[in-house]
Length: 61
Image (cartoon, rainbow, N blue to C red; front, side):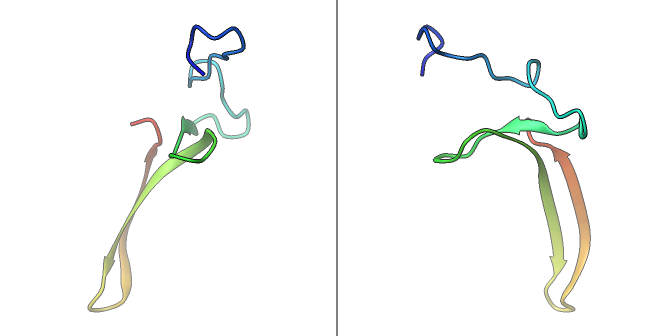
């Protein structure tokens, strides 16, 4: 719904947060609902089959 629709709700990181995890941020994927998440990236050494680095960032960055 657009912001001018009468039933539209303001959903942003300024209005929603998780009290048990205040660093989680709202993110959205096509076809899925908005959720509080992190953005995680992982580097893998495929020759050795080991995870060499993991990084978690804010989902809204």
